[in-house]
Image (cartoon, rainbow, N blue to C red):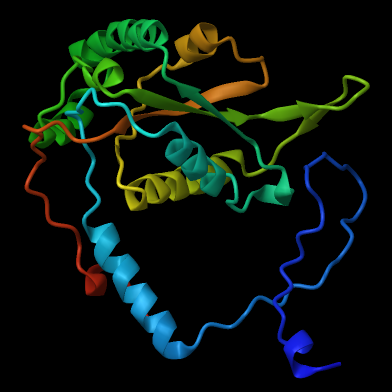
Length: 243
């Protein structure tokens, strides 16, 4: 076989649409992605590091619309996350309808008022005070889009049998991290909002019983007068242990 054919990347993508399988092995396919030259790898890693250092949690959003396709592509990136037993236990609901965003904000603020009035506990409230947060959640209606992430606790077979999903929290958490990164690298700002409890999200969005709300991500551009806390992240030597 000519060298040009031998070096052609093979990434193992042969199926166009995922369908669940249970109790049987996946078919194996070759995986030989093109290897990046070391100099290019180092350059891209450093560039990515610097771009991600610019990412901030934003609570003050412009009402300017965002390109829907950019948000869809970011969700597609998140959906490539690894998951326990490749069960992909997530659903992403993109909400741009102003009335639905209003209903979500109204329900979220109802729960937040109860939380800030004492349900959170003094220790948690003390941890939040430096950030200046309160029960008013303008970002839920100011941002032109919300991504509501649901975790699927189980899936139903064609015969109605429940099949448990495994490592759901870990899997969905990784996907949300990838979603935040993809949004930031697309020039969009976001916030991870987790009102507690979040049952109202299933009701407002009409989600099935096997799904449980995990987080709400307002997405948009920072408002012209947007401000963020002057935070310092831990340095690499504070978070990395090499052995």
